[in-house]
Length: 220
Image 1 (tube, rainbow, N blue to C red):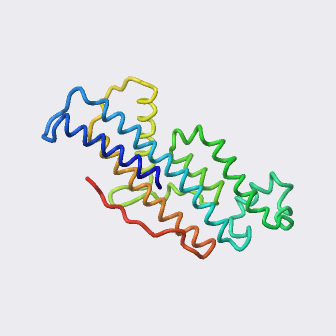
Image 2 (image 1 turned 135 degrees about the horizontal axis):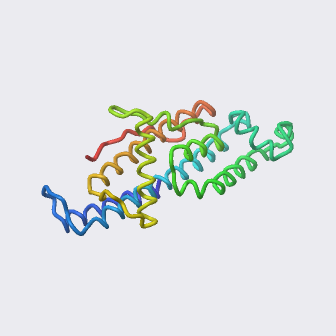
Image 3 (image 1 turned 30 degrees about the vertical axis):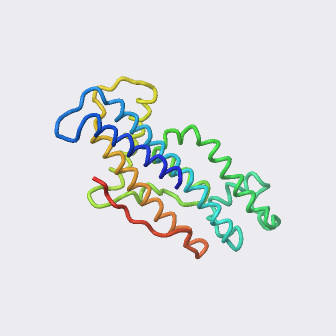
């Protein structure tokens, strides 16, 4: 969450510079597209850091408050057990299951760091499914005026745009301030939806809420 707030602040600062240099009146601004591109990179970095922090915080809370390993879905237990002499290992592990699940998170993050540098819906789904057992989190990314399919498509397009900017690929279309505002809004909504869905999932497994439910306040 700290990474999220930090990157949000930096993005807002870029938008302030945009307004200062280009003004706030109608019309296209020339010569300051680099600010828009920089803001897009920061917005996606914000999303990437948030997803990783949410996964780590969720696992840590579940481990702390779970009565035993049965708080985790079988899909996660089977994944971890396959690396620790099979499912029978759980009965002999004592508190070792906590370390095994933590090691699993480290392994998943290590393997997905490259793909989370392109944090598309598929990679986010994989991360949460393999570490805490919450499958298909992207299917909950919906709100008034946007279906989950549309939200996934918008995120993947945003990540593609960030990648092309980072690798200096020439775009046929320019990156406008409105594109930045749309990206900012999208990532904000995705973060809130993910926060609340993971919160509910954790409660269903350990009978405790890890944090408060949040409401998204649109800024544009």
